[in-house]
Image (cartoon, rainbow, N blue to C red; front, side):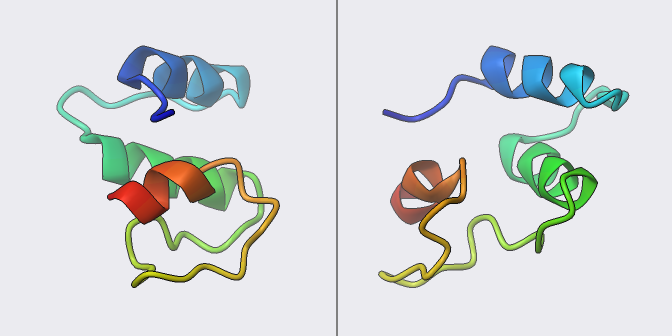
Length: 63
């Protein structure tokens, strides 16, 4: 099930990030990935993703 934008913003705030007005879902998730020390690869997978523990994997593959 795809994560709602409100949930994504909440996660960003929990990381101490400031959510900029007008950020789209992809941009925000990539920022969160970087803040968590991961590669900012959301939305770049083509039918396969080897990041099995990524919190965004399901959304990414649907993207």
